[in-house]
Image 1 (tube, rainbow, N blue to C red):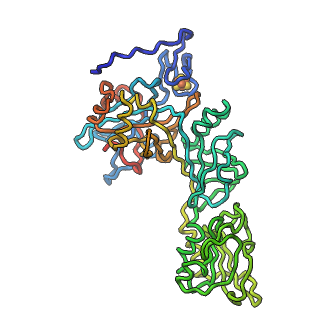
Image 2 (image 1 turned 90 degrees about the vertical axis):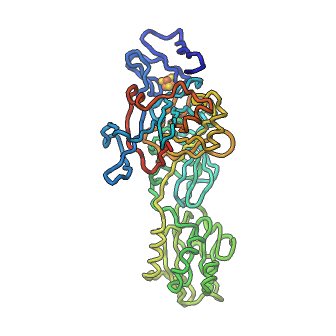
Image 3 (image 1 turned 30 degrees about the horizontal axis):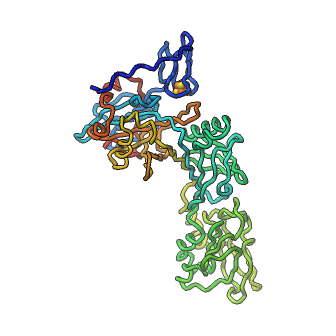
Length: 493
Ligand code: SF4
């Protein structure tokens, strides 16, 4: 039994009108009429009782005929019945929130794994400090680093660094949720909820592109759906395919906004003892065969603004070039290419691309992965939310750092950042659909689960008096059973 006194129910507002119930699941304290829901649509007044509108989502692992764990894609494909002994995991989706956080989390559920007693503490956290990090696979220029990103004319984030084949955005965050106008906070919150729920969102980058971004879908940049993520930078592309071009072509220039590669000058060409081609290109030479800034950034070849590759040619050196020299120009995705042969006057003359050269161009395309938007949820769970887990919050933080506690978000594995606090990051693509909500404070509502050995939970000062069995949950709660995504590791174990 608990050593604490039984907590009194919060006193409703003295101004509460007859027939209404007060929701105390967040600081807004909605007063809800019979048959209506509160501002966030998560809680409703059902017959005078405050009720979480959605059922809590349980994941079930089920073996198919082959004995393999199968993936169920949606509730339509699921009978809702649990097989005996089927492993079940209670997720935070639909679990409800216990505000203010001195109250234990809504679900603290015991289970047994490999003869060990386990427990999972489950809640829907209200996160003011959270954001989404979006990776957009594209070479195309979407805007300058640090540029504001807008949705519905409000700034909701900014462009961060260009990474290898991808442009990164940071969207949401406490600054936009709380630090600007009321409208900025509301627009930011709506956008974050949509992103987390795998819906498409429209973004306008100052000085850059118009984007449509959706988790695990190709980005749409200025109305054009991106198809390929580049094989590598221009220099890497030269290095990868140098041997396959050798003997079929005399010079290859891989056009890239960042590092354009020139095969015969490049270390790869030198290693193959290739004759120097003598074709000089614009830009700043970094090292042999590697050039920066050959053009401006844009939506053309290799993320530059060029559509005619000859515009990056500065000169042809008659000391090195020769009539009949075979030259390929190609982009980092292989989508754009042109083949030339130098004529008697050392002019680049378009010619039909030979089959062996075209085969390597096609191989560049074959080595490109599909371009996607990847959306990661980043949230700070190191605040008062911890009190729903334990009466000694620092013990939870330490236990997570000591790897005694497995943190998941809607069942998706969460990466916990090193250093202070409990900064978790999870791929929304691995979470169930519609796992995110919001409250008008404004803040984002997201599922989070902490799974550990029961003994460890006791040791960190857990709310042992609130530990329930799975049977108790199944009998006493409205639940929705969905199949486990076999791509995720099972959290209990
Ligand atoms: S916004 Fe939602 S959680 Fe907050 S008080 Fe209103 S109904 Fe309850």
